[in-house]
Length: 110
Length: 114
Image (cartoon, rainbow over all chains, first blue to last red; front, side, top):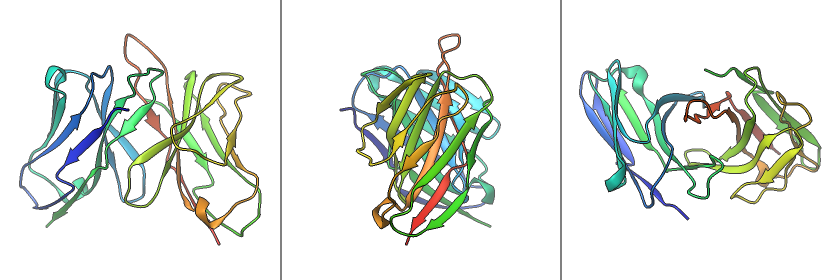
């Protein structure tokens, strides 16, 4: 099956710093989503981005489908950005079953 | 955005009890999903449904069962809870619209079996 790898696994930042999170996947995909899981366990949708670039405030994402990777950029990080960031791709078998990466655990300190 | 509700949010229960985790969505999405997540780990799909009376097992084997009698409701049942079932269970829904099939998640149920 398709493999999804995220890096780095852990990241510690000072407030105000910028960061880049990476997601590599092993097969072509029709659907790629980025999520932020907050300390209470809720998954928040960040981007639906099977290809191209999108921006939402301090966050932006780029997916290069032909090279099978996606990047999530966080600028001017805040303590509320802490949590786990997951990349998920659709199983190539279809039916919109999502395969999740292991996540990047981000801690932003004041 | 989808409104997805899960109850209970937290549940501590003894071994051998039958439990049902509730999941409802109000957006009329045809697809619904259950994922299991151990602390600090990735999510794994355990059940999914494409509509009423449709249920399928996901990639991670689970002793739980699901039903889809109404579009908005997708409950998950464990007939006899065991400590190995301790985990977080997350429900999601989606609908294909304008070529976009984005999944939205509920707040999760954190289950502890003692």
